[in-house]
Amino acid sequence: MTRGFCCLPLLVIAVWAAAAPGQVAPYNPYADAQDSPPPLAADGTIHWGTFYKSAKLQQSYERLWNLGACRGSNKAITVPVAENQLVIDRLPEAEFKGVVRAVVGQAAGGMVAFDESDATGGHAEPLIAQFHPAGVTRFQIGGRAPASILTTGMVVRLRAEVDGKGYAVEPVSSFEIVTPPAGFIPDAVRPKRMETIVGTVVSVQKNLVGLRVDAGKLRRITLQLDADAIATIDAARLDLVSTGDEIKVKGRLWTGEGAMGAGTIFVSDVVVSKRPPADSAATQPGPQTVGAR
Image 1 (cartoon, rainbow, N blue to C red):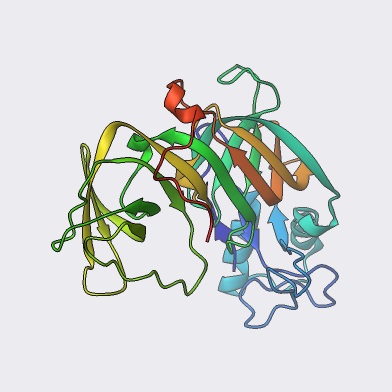
Image 2: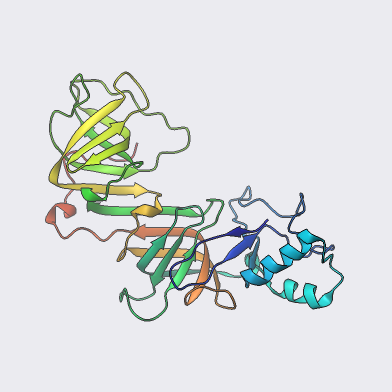
C-alpha cells in the first residue's frame, strides 16, 4: 500500500510503497505479502523501498487494479507503471550540508528544506531532506536556544530543588531538552534536595513551566524560568529545527522526475546544530546545566 506525504509549499507530492524490485509477478499494490525488506536491517542499514515518480500515475494504476480492470496483461499500462518506479536503495549515498530554510512534519516522514550555502530564503530551490516514514532515520539536534523554544510534550532535564508541593525553590536559569531512550524511567523527585529532575512539559505560561514526572510521589513540578534562561538541546525532535540552523545529512539524492526542489535526499543520518542566541549567556554553561547520564 502506498504512503503519501504532504510537501512543502509549491513542491510536488512524494508517494511511497514497500514494493520489492525484481518481482516475477506483476506488482500488486493490494497484495497481503510483498517481498520487501524491513525498514531497518539488523546491521543498521535503512531500506526505503520504492518511490513513485508520478503519484497520479500510480494512483490511477492502483484504482484500475482494485477494480479488476488491469491484471498485468496490457503493456500500454504496465510499462509506464514499471518505469514510474524508482528503487531508492539503488541510489548511491553521499553527504550534504547547508542551512535550514523550512521544516515540515515530524521525525517519521518529515522533511527539511535546506540551502547548500549560507544564503537562506533565496530564490534558488532548496534540497529536500526526506525522513524515512518508519522513523528509522538517525537524527540528532544539538546546541543552545532561548527558553522560549519550549513547548508541551518536550522532555527536559535540569538540576533544581523543589518544596513539598513540587514548586521550584529558585528560578531556573538553564536546562536541557532531551530525548530519553525507550523504556526510560526517571528518578523520583524528593523535596528539599538539589537533584536532577527529568520530566515532560505539560504546560508553558510565560515564565512558568509545568512538568510531569513519571516516578515517585511528586508527579507534578512547577518551575519559574529566568527571563534570560537558556535551553541546551540534545534531542531528536524535528520541531526543534528552525530556519538558519546548520544541517548535515547523509542520504540518497534523486533529481529526476518527481523530485522536490533542487532534489530529494532520502536521508539515513541527519545532524542539526542550532545557531546560538545572540545573548552572551548562550556562550557560557549555566550553573544548573547537567551532562548526559
